[in-house]
Image (cartoon, rainbow, N blue to C red):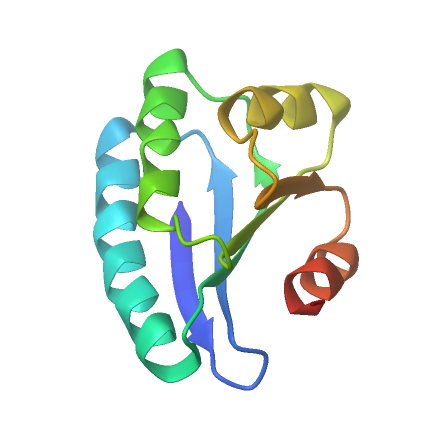
Length: 119
């Protein structure tokens, strides 16, 4: 399961990932993310995404490859992506796919949101 919503008060796109995912799940997620990315750029000028994947399981290589294409949507130097994970293995898996200074992996939603909102 993948969900997304825009939090206008925090100016952050919030996502939740849980369980095993399919490539089709990620493709649907990408379409929603594209719409919300446009909304965030129009209202805030930047994109801030917090993806809570603590309930997600270790994903297949195909699913991770599909996720690896998503950062190209959030590519402005001012954009930021925070992924929240629950295990060291998941953190390592995410680091392989998200390795720029604008993408970070966290183990707490609060810390992720604080980083997204910082200057």
